[in-house]
Image 1 (cartoon, helix red, strand yellow):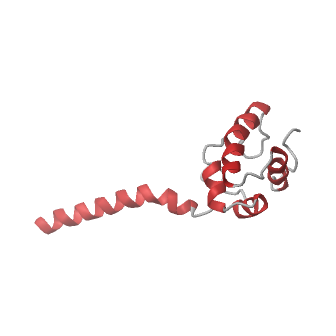
Image 2 (image 1 turned 120 degrees about the horizontal axis):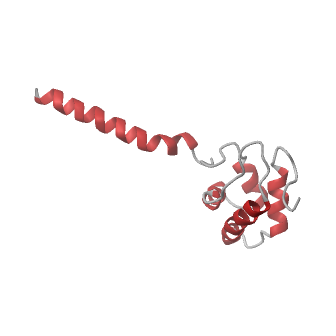
Image 3 (image 1 turned 180 degrees about the vertical axis):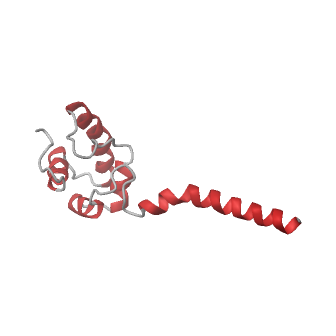
Length: 114
């Protein structure tokens, strides 16, 4: 009887650990949980920063839903989060540089500043 209880505990613990870590593993390094199709490595290279630095800075950004353009308010709010964080990684990043790089990798092309 004791072995079956321990096996049940082991299975339950394993399931809980897997459930808690699966999202982080699924996203993988250099992937964005909030925008998983964004080409992180290419953007980071163009900004001359490491991919993990871009991911860390992008974590609090709220991208527009797929197939839509960001509103001006959303764009400004995201820029207020993203730009200063990126500049900590590379002080040479300017607002224009960030717009150019991000626009380059948007499927719909130029959006920033419309």
